[in-house]
Length: 477
Image (tube, rainbow, N blue to C red):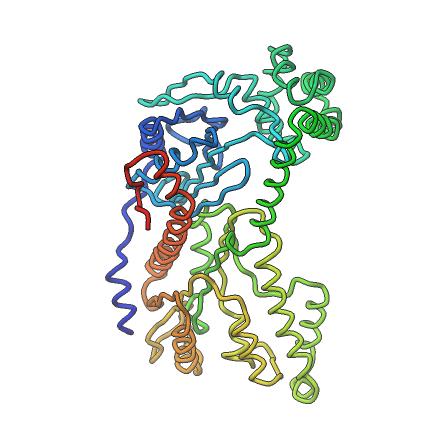
């Protein structure tokens, strides 16, 4: 066994059991109250403190109190922040160490600053907070919106923003509007005007889905026109900030974290990834497997043609086709890094793309080796490498089959390759699969914690200094 495997196994004992959700909720509410933040939970609080009926916890806080809310979160020693991303209207925080659901060890907490569409508020934050009502959950007390405000936010968060109706909340919204039609219209009038407000409320009360969906366009037009008419400069600035934030998240790599698993055939790479994916749920907005396959139509045709060709044909005229395939994979991965992200994303996949440089024959590559090595260097480097190592002499694969004859040489190539990388953890694949998965999970969480900590220091240190003399949890550089 390699020394670095022993060192990592000794330095990474299994983490303590995650906090029950009820215990975490009580600690969070206490921490928020200690910072002077009146916690207002927007929805899905009916099961508190025993369970959370939603995928996250939505707190409504004024923008000025976001640093205090984050200070409260960072003061809870039993949990760790593994992800943070901020949009114009909401700050999304991902916490590890909470038993939020069976088999899940993370919880998402959203601090919603504004109830907006395209940066334009459809419900005033101050009005919701002023009308909020206290509610008890176990030994803790928090606040919830008035029924009318909760119904409006639950309805428009999907209808106005996404253009679709969320059935989960519809019966509550319909009942609330029917019981207090005048109150619902009054709450909507400042942003939409009386005509659009009455049309929406009556459509909801009638339960006609088609009429409700037909209200989307008039509502958006009314909101935009009234906002620009009454607050032209502020509204234009808000729209510009919203779109700039969306562009930054979708087209900059800061919202993407990638983990690459390397190891010779038989080390159980795919099994480790399959076990990691459910464990890592809620550590990012999207947790997905990084598939190594062509996605563009012309790339799929190229892949099919090179695989359909026989070895003689490939040796004769497969050079340019192989180089084109390598270039296509390179292009696709960079496009995947830049395009298509809507929020914080964690991707986990095998390092098959790097086999073009380490084992080109595995992918029927018939081009020059210098081009394969160049493609490997230009390929976007993952944030973390996990090398599955094992004593290949006389060993069998995880499936009980004999390891391929080239496994020792392949493992040496992998070791030489990862030595050039900044962040790599070597794991002992000879250990039981559950132990390997836990070690891989610990390495990924450590990487996420370090990255989130750097981001939080950049974002909140100056604000922490402004709100108090006490140094925030985690410290500032």
